Image (cartoon, rainbow, N blue to C red):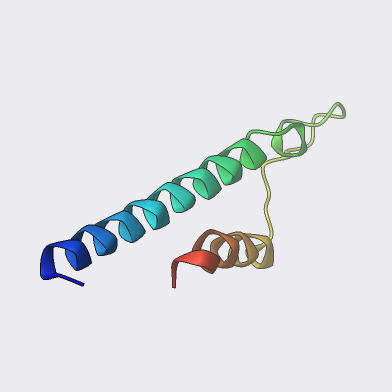
Length: 66
């Protein structure tokens, strides 16, 4: 494999990782915008999120990018 071909392959792989990460971040944003995190019908705040949930999302976002 020539050096240019290797660079092209590396660039394609990096672009794919960036696209995958962007898709997962969009999924997380959609999750945060779900009714689960809106004000509840009884007036209670619904914007609480557990640290464990955030850590799981971050692991999911980075899963294929390591």
